[in-house]
Image (cartoon, rainbow, N blue to C red; front, side, top):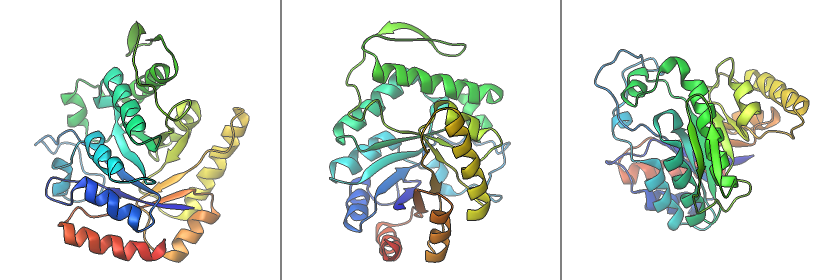
Length: 276
């Protein structure tokens, strides 16, 4: 099982290039950065964490810009979005950003995607929360077409464009892995339909997750697919817990790094590196 890092990287924390270098030096396999374009002042949508929304949510750096900095300061570290809110992004522009980052990193990008939870945030982007999952599927499918076809086109309910030219194409073939985020009732349907991997968060226990992983692999086999990798977001840094996750079929575990002052981030990485 690979071990990586996840962070809501902010403007008041460590620089992304420095973070990438430290992560690679300490032996971590990957670095994932989260995304929020903004946070509406309204608190109509409750924070899933069950408390006041932490400050970092409204201070996050753009993940593609920050991950580019991390990629150019490293040689082996895989860089990923954990997750990119594709329902708030134009798919043609985002396809270009993904391909560019995969090009710059030499094929080290992991494309984590999700539909988000903040309904006011979605609405500010013109997205209807009730149709966001259908929108996410179409945008991912449209991006796959752009990455894999010289003259790509897509015609759906929410995404519709005639043949286009768009380069560069990603280094990874056919495209960077698409990690579908979430733990809802229908997430496995989404993973099998258009994902390459699953990235669940807010996992209650390895054994409970293991039951869903087993179901995921059964569905994958029925669909004529191979075994689907699973990345756990926000794993607790405990050796026995990690062993339980691995026994249940988890292929990557991500430790959450708090976006504090640079020296404190480095201290956290030193502690987490003891498990690598």
